[in-house]
Length: 66
Image 1 (tube, rainbow, N blue to C red):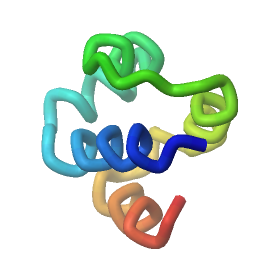
Image 2 (image 1 turned 90 degrees about the vertical axis):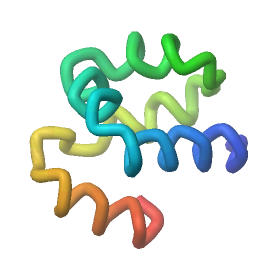
Image 3 (image 1 turned 90 degrees about the horizontal axis):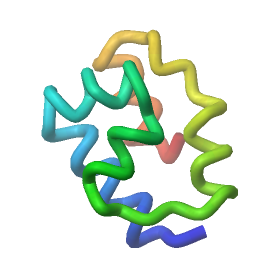
Image 4 (image 1 turned 45 degrees about the vertical axis):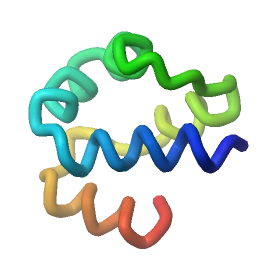
């Protein structure tokens, strides 16, 4: 797993409200548009997260390391 790519993605998610909204609609497209490359393992891990939870709940989970 590329911690650099995941770190960039988490930073973007934590700091960019539009990206969070786009990500909730279509995670793979939102990631593609950032130019950040993730492998299948990383994408699979992201798909396991319940993105319908509130921003605060998700930020808390991400801060704890997903």
